Amino acid sequence: MRTTLPPIAVIGAGFSGTMAALHLSRLMPERPVLLCEKSSAFARGLAYATGCSDHLLNVRATNMSAFPDQPDHFSRWLEGCPLDGAAWTHSTPAGLFAARGLYGRYLTDLLLTALSKPGPGPLLMLENDEVVDLAPAETGFDLTLAAGRRRRVAGAVLACGNLRAPRGPRSRYVVDPWDDTPLDDLRPDLPLLIIGTGLTMVDAVAALRQRRFPGPILAVSRHGLLPQVHAATASWPAPAIPAAARQSLLGLLRFLREETRRAASAGIDWRGVIDSLRGDSVGLWRGLPLSEQRRFLRHLRAFWDVHRHRMAPPAAKIVGREFAEGGLTLMRARVVAIDDQAGHARVTVRERGVAAPQVVDVQRIIDASGVGRVVDTDDLLLRRLLSRGLVRPDALGLGLAVADDLAVLGQHGEAGRPLWTLGPLLRGTLWECTAVPDIRGQAAELARTVAKRLQSAATGVGRETA
Image (tube, rainbow, N blue to C red; front, side):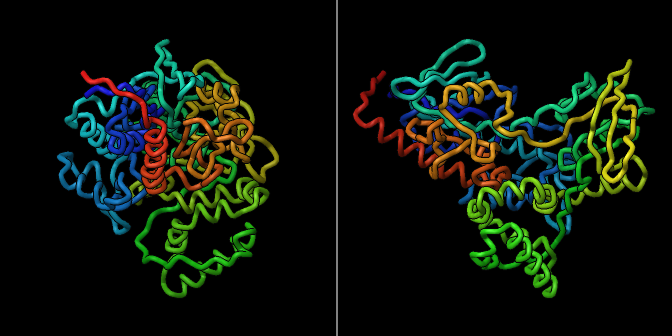
């Protein structure tokens, strides 16, 4: 039997899009699912496309199952994986940590399994091209690809992943942290600058050393903070946070400090307290007044991030060795100017607490400054959707405004069109929405919502048989 129902499009095939597509293809066997990806690899995205074995997941393998109802799914997959465990997984007192490239292989296996599933027609179809437009149609959208082809779709799920941050000072020596090509001809005698000191910086340092770059590395950020390290610790019960504390950032901070002291007196460190908040993190964020959310972004975000998003112990060991041997220098500073020279860039940085700026010559500048906001994005599809009023930024400008069922809100607050989103585009609404443990349940629930709506809309639509 061949259905005449138009497909549901999922735009983006990183973790968010891949899992949404897999759930949708299972829930709607009568309707094709069109999974669109502009990069060369499906089911990987930027995070899991790396081939560096020192690029590790910053979540323990035991909490990396792709399915919320099968918590040991990834662990069982690892047991049967033929790759060299010594190179691609690391057992530590804090738990087992796998390489991100290995996790990409896991997601690829899930996708291949779905594609090979027997049936009368294609449940899941792959489109290796960039979606550049979604124009409203009588039912659904007309989807346009970069190559010029068009498809009528019943609806769409925006799974665009993390948006790129706006570029800082322009220079021909600035390179993307995930593009190895500009790093092929590095000189050993000239420093390399990394803008940002978070997990992407940690990955960049590991990749540079694995590529046998022996030269000095300078990393700068406004606060000069490094991610904390995972450690073995007992769990701490989810605290009952008073209503008054939930309305105030200062009240929450005071409560967490007191809770951390209580945990310490019981022999449990701060990690247990931070982890105990996971189930309540979305409620805490959404309960804060908008003014308090903005205050968090201005003053506390960097401190929260380094405690919440921690390094795997092997990654911390690499960074610690670099500091001890003098190969890596960290500065609390910001880049104020870049002047391109012949063969290198002359960078002016202003260190916090130091009046005079400092000038340093570097051969490359790796931009690891973090995630961009939807209001600043240069993504062609999102810009077109914004200009048409089909989507609007959330109140903080971080991601897209959505209804409770993750349907995207239009310019005037309406959510009538069959357009949804998940993952990092929900940062302003949910805040905690970028890690696998956050997204996997989101993807399963969203698929149920989308399937219910489209199946209801399809009632009475005829089918052809062939």
